[in-house]
Image 1 (cartoon, rainbow, N blue to C red):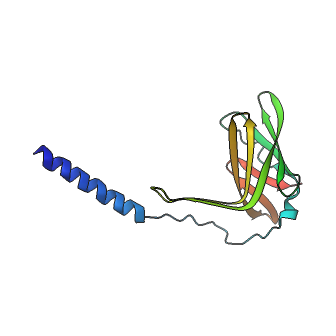
Image 2 (cartoon, one colour):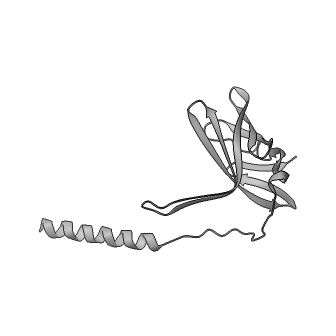
Image 3 (tube, rainbow, N blue to C red):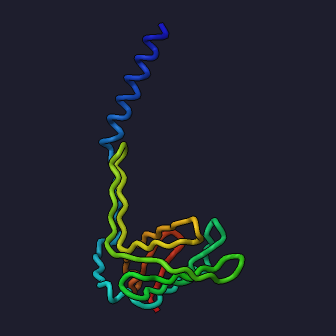
Length: 147
């Protein structure tokens, strides 16, 4: 009796896995407007419009990001110790796909990578949107508007 239960459970798990792989969910934006921006137009300071409204879980919040040139970025944080500035790198039109067991795809209009300290590499994936006739870069708890 126990052998048949194990066989039944294995078959059930295989069926569930087979159906879950083919089930894809697409997230659609409310706005289908395409925003075209060249790399040169990113250069300059972008302030976070949500600074006074939200706070990240780890206690730090990005106050502003300055795109220095075509690959260097300066990020200004506010945390419990005050204002901290770190440098990083950025690139446009980032796309990464992982297909080992589950298809996982990362897409971003802008990818920023920086070291918050000596041992933690962070990635910030931003989406370019148009909001109230202004171009903004958005992510979770971040809405950057060019100064």
